[in-house]
Length: 182
Image (cartoon, rainbow, N blue to C red):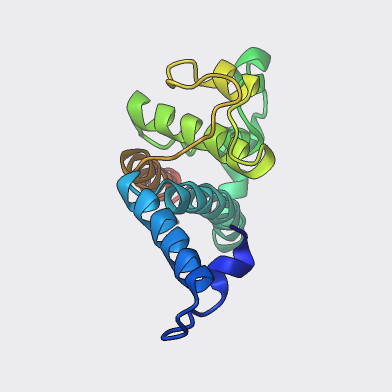
């Protein structure tokens, strides 16, 4: 069954057994999705929180620096001497937060969920929902094997969405705490 079969309106009262078979196939597919707890929408939805978090963080930092120019004059920026090893372990945006003194206070569980979200999102977007060796090396605790279809559960989707929201809120709170006061 292809997308044309699923998307074509159902013909009613035609007496056509081929049409009835098509309707039954679509129903079977829909019931399988329900029985599996909607992995396809959860997988598709998993891409959204990461993209939103990336964009929101980037936009927030730019707006923060523009709105509060004194933030660019903080002691952290003025003394841009950082331990190379510590700095190199950070991603680009985390480096900016480090330099700005914005350290979101999230626990290890939230950081792990964000790390997992990034890895899962990468496999969904770049590997067509297939588990690969990169995902397995980044998240060895996940119960997948190389080549498995990647189905995101409702619980995973909720954890990822919650972690992204908590991280965003914590970033804003940390920025507010570190903002130079006039």
